[in-house]
Length: 238
Image 1 (cartoon, rainbow, N blue to C red):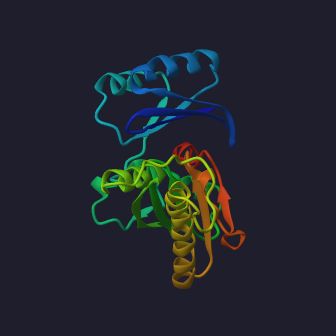
Image 2: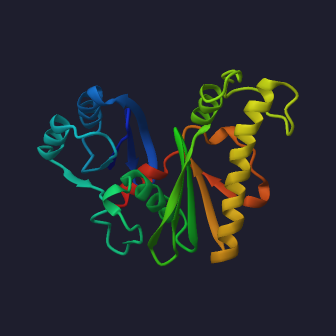
């Protein structure tokens, strides 16, 4: 069994795999991470590997804890990509390891084509891995909450709209105009990336992941696969 640890900016995500199947998953704040790992290891003595990545500030106590575990512990770093993966990003030292993990997770599910991974969280990231295993790079765009807050804070009179609610094609009130402009705008953004990449690279397999992935209206023609555990699946490939 393999335990994966994804250390984000504010929280940690733990996913336990039995082979390719997700056995258990949980989220905790950084301060509770050691306790959460210890409990999982206690309840599942068959765990033999822990694979992790981090975009958080250094956590020396946690790193020392991981180093002394009686397991095979592997960290994913864009500076040391897995065998068979090359990095086309010109500044790999600034590339978030979770972005690389996500495309590796998509590759574990579909290795027969060029991959586009869209991770919709606080920010929306777009990352491309070729069929040959070259990470070409990607883009970073503001997420839903960030866009709604920017519309409110950088204007004199626009209110702060909630992310949840009606999103008609054309808003019929300020609230729906703001929400639809943001949510549907992101949908069109995603579909535009897929069309443009298909034109350049031919067959593209697109994956959508992240906490906000359910908010978007994506055309069925875009053929997007949804998976909540792409980052964890990528870490489990180490």
